[in-house]
Length: 561
Image 1 (cartoon, rainbow, N blue to C red):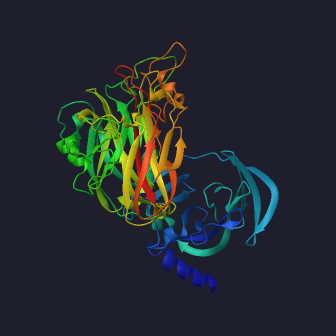
Image 2: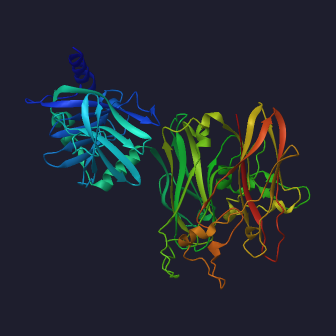
């Protein structure tokens, strides 16, 4: 009666979509439980193997239960008679592809040891793959062949796979009386047969959501009009802006920003930034892009005559929110014709950074997203960028939330007259007064800083301490400095070479390297009470030498619980 009851369940629930053949095969059904360090990790979704002498089918239980399947997912089908092994990818409910896997040689070592699993006498086989030792226990007492992972499927019926003694997949249930034709059930002809590269690419891309920002777009210094839907060009073409809609996000979604860059004529290392344009108040940075920097509020130190447009938050303005700071290398792609020793230059620079901390802000919203690369070259740089949303991460974003953007001194509109951020020449540095309407627990400042001044005594090549205070209490003293720039030499074909045996791209710099991202640091500020507070950033900026000067691009966003 137990077998009959199981067969009713499996044919009505797991295989409700099966079309029975006139002569169904006799199949054995095995469920496998997986253990990691002796703890069960798949109790609610065991691996299921349906096997006979001619075929084997490997899936997860929830993939077979109508309504419980979670797309995308993969299954495996083996045809022993025709020596064919298929991977089947269910990308969506209506989109299914498959690839034919090449026959692989599995050189097992067979042993004389035996053990009993679920009443069946099993033999031992071992194999080493990618520095992992796998031990398989298989039986030949059933008229079926298969394995929970296709490995060892030709040995017989594999009932246990042990990887390195810490990860085990073990048969938990065996039923022998399922009569179906696997070809009729799988309907392989309903899936599109594709080559390996297409299969892996489509499967990979289906695992996450991609929101396109820019694609093969020029960031250059030119008045040329480029007609492209949803693409806006400002500051002589050195700032690109697009408008995107972000879908509703789950608390466990992880967000990444991705950008690629190639030189289209500019050979130099340039500051780049990807940013959001808030529109919380009557004035926004978008107004400045459209109307000119004159609409932005002015920041000025008491002991200086220098004026800086739109760098701090005020009662009626919020500065751009920097998602990612990056730096172009010296001429990747555009100058790959330069021959230096035996270097093989990269085709493009790749930048990728997690921005999950902004998930609550971005969820179910529309934003203007901008990218800036400072340059005075008509060819400029070619970029592509997107945001990817990946499910199944930790619930991190809900534990901390962006409270307010406080400052961003990067002169994104440099080519439209926005002043360089040289305010740190004043002992007062940068001072921001802000008001919170509620208490903030465990406040943190997301801080990005890079120093510039490209000559021997400039701040670019000299470590300078950054001091951050909250309400006159020091929060951090920090020396921003990168010493790993030489790791990226093969992205920098146009980098100048010196008699010392070094190249310019090798040199250590104030928190940046040509061809890399500068990640934010997180500065703990403690609990902040409701009311008005002041954050100060002080940096001992170097003095001018003739026409050369130093400056600091810093951005800060306040987070808290």
